Length: 384
Image (cartoon, rainbow, N blue to C red):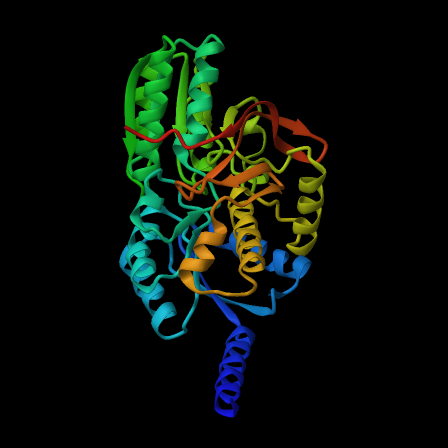
């Protein structure tokens, strides 16, 4: 009996010691390079969440290990993920600014059985690359389909699609073409620009010559200002061509620099800093106060909700951070986000959320994407 009690006591002590260990989160985002704005937004949102909710949950201290992958090299992202898992012993991977980088890290998460919270990258198939991936951001297909349907219902009969030539852009193009033509619209042309160092002017010249009713655009966060500037400089608006887009183009973080060129542009997305809920008003006020008036964007919200998901899952497991148990606890979680109601689909591990149709309007404190319509509880429609 004494020996049995000693064994139980030792086991309990070991369990308590394990529970007391910090839970390490490897946050991989571009803090430098062409997509550094994404990293800044994610980092700021994670810090704000910790400030508001404390740096411990369910008896576990949360330790964030921030790593800059530069946003352009999948090999670099994979190496960082491997080092975080093997050397730093992280129990969660998070972040991932662009799709190729999430793809690169997916096998690392699978092999290590470490949950991987994709806060930003938006190609539909990402969760299929690892059974340990959960997404708290969005998919391009998810935010594009409502835009195509809205355009067809609002006197836009012909469209040129123009996207960045990589996973999310191809998803956006395919879904827009499918839904717009199914509603009776005509696609005049589908153009793709290279992801790195693009010059949009030759493509916009072709659009002007084609004379569609509208140009549908997707470019990744950070590139929207260049598109809008060149759209204006090339005289497409003067030629009567409307610009419609996904919300990436009218990134809230960029709106102060885009300014009046954005006014009147209609876009579809899952978040706007002007979303009128009390939760979002409080979030925007806190975020701008903590970050020298920087306006939060959809990447910040993907990160903020990624942290919420982690905390909720740890509460459900009682602080147990074993990969399979933590992942299981993330499935089916629902909460009221600053963007509106969200759910993690337990079957796909992807996010279900409202998608809003917005119009850029000049207000007293700048240009904002003002919501005027929505599709509720919208799942990723997938891409054929």
